[in-house]
Image (cartoon, rainbow, N blue to C red; front, top):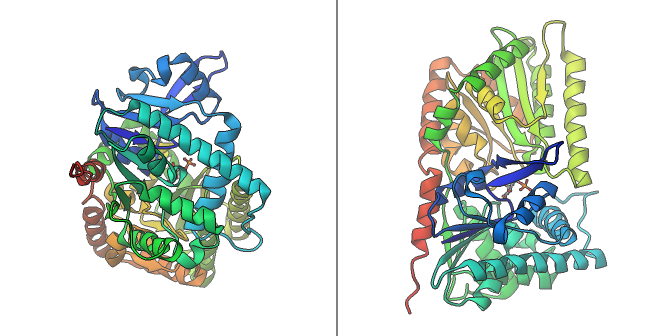
Length: 467
Ligand code: G6P
């Protein structure tokens, strides 16, 4: 069995003395796929993402990384030409496909489909071909191959052409755009993306809504009817309760809780958010809603702190760097405007620290998850599982998690700042026993589909095609 994704389970940093340090990757995709385990017959194919990774590949025999650095998994990292990778990953995947599926284009962030885009598209094809060729090389006769996400939309068809014997699945971790939005892509590109995924035996999504949008796009762009060879599936991904509860009670998390408590101040309520600093996460509107809350409900001043962790993401792209700066600027403005000698209204941290995220989860009275669009959003699922006293959840109706958690959350339209401020007020005002009850129900729904099940169900659904 093989898995393919742009980001692998491990990444390498070069130390000052030139030595290489391996680090486990995070994120929903990696934690879900970790269920692949250390089975000797399975291989995870991923791309080298930086200088450290490239050095590790050159050191590794045949690109297979040393098992002691990968947690026992067989990982083959591809050293794709740096320019090709940058154009495919930054140019096409993150600047175009991510923006289409999350519907993020708005003036002045407009799509540009010029000659430069076409050059980047050629790199996207080359990058997908490198994956297809490596998979074709690694796969045993009749093997199952699970190809992940928008980075690799063309690889299923390419692999099918090279190896018709394989069982191929594609999984999208993002939302899928509705046809009217998807069709802002040039027609030939839209058709290639859809046909690429339809090269798989099975195309799967995190929710029914994204699966239906994909089917609608196929009808609109390619004509009626999904080809007989391809099935469409839905697999929700839940939080890993056992891992989270165990990890959240390690000494490093306790230490960070003490430090956070000191920053927050005694007896105050906390509104917690943890995200990559990402336009789709809607962090700025979240801050503006919090500001509106302080304005409309002065009774909360000095009594609540917004703990916002916004970890750097895709910093090669200027739009992400600018967004990061805007998040900082608005947090500072709120602190200047409302802060007092003993109270900092927004505690913003930008340095990625998983133990500190868990500490914040444990302290959360309210979790704020307000993305513009999100494939699933695991933070919405993780906080109720980990919070010590139970938390209320303010949740965007545009997150995939809404389908499973909507009933017990305070649901918001992510663009509606005043509405989000109202939801924050209601969530903060919820009596402790009602909050604990809701939190319990949220945690039960959030853990119904643990990552191992998500993975094994997909594999089982890819059972051998009739010969
Ligand atoms: C989303 C995508 C993943 C991606 C992750 C982090 O969850 O669906 O494929 O790995 O974001 O983004 P990055 O660009 O850092 O890999």
